[in-house]
Structures are given as structure tokens and as C-alpha cells.
Length: 256
Image 1 (cartoon, rainbow, N blue to C red):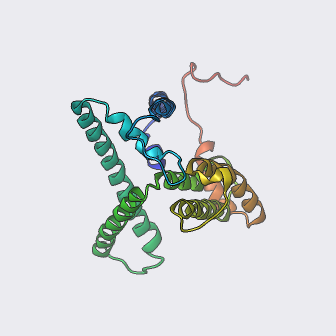
Image 2: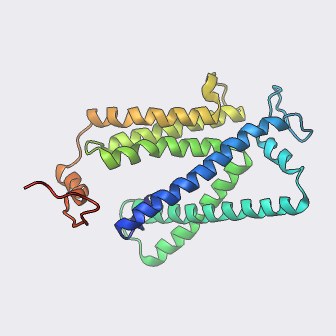
Image 3: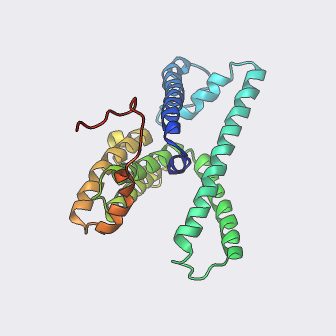
């Protein structure tokens, strides 16, 4: 998401991007919500699976719905799902491997890392991240992983944009809280742990809880921790103080 903002070249792209992104979000989110709602119509389908407690295995609803489609449409759906998955996976693992190598390992963990070592490290991390993604898919923990990411990064991203007092400790607290909590939810689902989480036993509810909790954790921890360097913050927000020339149709002149 941050990379998309860096790709903006001029002001006009922001207006176009706002419209395109909004339309795309409405189509995707609207389609998902309607799909979930109409999924209840298929609960009597013989393809629906049930767990040991008699509850519906939600991951079996979509395959049951698709099983009633013609073979040609099923093939199209599978191709679309695979293409979307591969494009997302490739961008995620490439970004993750380069970020870990260049921003975390180079200069911090490994003091001297030439270009060849960087390339080998990134290739190795790509394999590791793909393996982690495969494990998450096998144990059906996608809801957990997305909930962890949303809870970990929503508040730091939001406060980092609009609040100068946000600190690294506040951001780390939000990231660690969501990661640990969603990991406990995953272990609880797999039966490794037996926790009475109530409504939060659902990855969807747990993810929403982590998102809301992060909005409180970041400001609270930031206020009780040392404020960030003033000059560093002012330099980061200095772009908002730059004067730009616009047409009269965009902004009215100040009165003399």
C-alpha cells in the first residue's frame, strides 16, 4: 500500500486513483458481502462439510457453490483464482524478502553484506516465505493471517500519517499485540490450546478486535514513551509546508 503512494507522479493521479480505487473497492467488497450472504442458501447442499461440534465448515461453502456450475465456468474460476493468488504471492514475497534483507539484516544483523550475499539471502527468504504461505493455506489460517496484518499495521499506518507524536514503541506494541493474539486464536482453532475466547474465537471477530485495539494501543504507548526526535519528525512532515501554485479554479486567493 505504501508503495502505491510512492508511485504517484503528480496531483492529477491522486484524483484519478481515488475514483478508480473507490469503484474497485465497492465491486470487490460488495461482491464479497453478497457472496457471504447468499452462501447461507447452500447450507443444505450435500457438498457442505461439518466439524466435530456440528458446525458448518465455512471453507466448504464456496466449493459447494461452484460444484453446481458448468465445467467451463469452473475452469475459468480456477484460472482467475490461481492468477490472482500468484500475482499477490509474488509481490508479497518479493517485497518481504527485500525488506528483511535490506532494512533488517544488512547493516544491523550482518554488518558487511555485499551484493552477491544480498541476492542469495533474498532468494532464500523467498523460498521461506512461500513455504510459510503454503503452511498457512494448508491449515486454513488465512483469516488469522489477514486479521494479524490488519490489526498490526492499521494503527501505525494511520497515526504515522496524521500524528507527529506517534513513536516506534507504540507501533511495535500494536504489531506485537496483534501478532501474539492472532497466533493464540490460530492455536485455539487447531486444538493446540484450549482458550475460552467467546466471540473472539472467530478469526474475523478477533481481527476486528485487534484493529480497534491497535487504535488505542499506539497512542497510549506513544504518550508514555519517549517522544521521537523533533527534527526527524519535522523533516518527515516538511512536505506539507511547501508552497505550490494552483489555478484559480482549485483555490481562491487570500484577501489582501
